[in-house]
Image 1 (cartoon, rainbow, N blue to C red):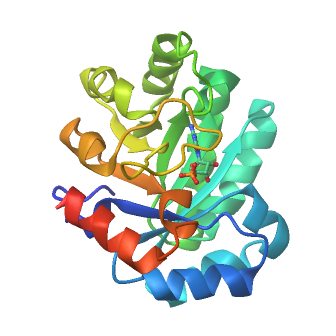
Image 2: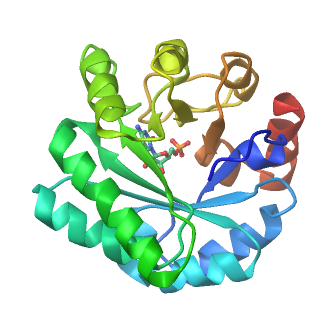
Length: 226
Ligand code: C5P
């Protein structure tokens, strides 16, 4: 369930894009004062699997399983059911996979969470990757996510208004502190811009984790969001 009000720290999602669980947990521990949610993407999941979820829960984080499921509806349903049983707080699906696929995934999340007697994870549709400069597919994918019953979408700060008009919450990656390297991201915003645009959650990766002083960078992000 999405809380009705989010503190600045509750909005911040730490992207643990590293290949090893020990490195991930060391980063998570150092930055725990600034982030309520830890994001496990495909790199860390490939290395550590569900143990990463358990270890991050033990450190007090909510967990976003950023696994971007995209397959036939039956496979997505069964995979989401497994993940729903694990007690992750967020899971996402590629909206390009279509309404039936996302519906099947959301059903799987409900079935898994019910079987494990845990809360149903927040379901997000990935609209257009923030590394893609062309967001022309956004309206169609937003509509698909809304029609499928997603709670929210993953989108850049530039598309937050449209997502809100569709009644969906927003998880916003491509966040960069002013002067920080955009890397492979195209549709970027500062933490202040993203939150002023109405972002519910901000995914924070290299702008903090690759900063010369990650703790100072995280403090700056939290200050901007506050
Ligand atoms: O380091 P950086 O801030 O670019 O990390 C962004 C994170 O958000 C990465 O883990 C990436 O996989 C994820 N992401 C994204 N764009 C999306 C969905 C997820 O950058 N549309």
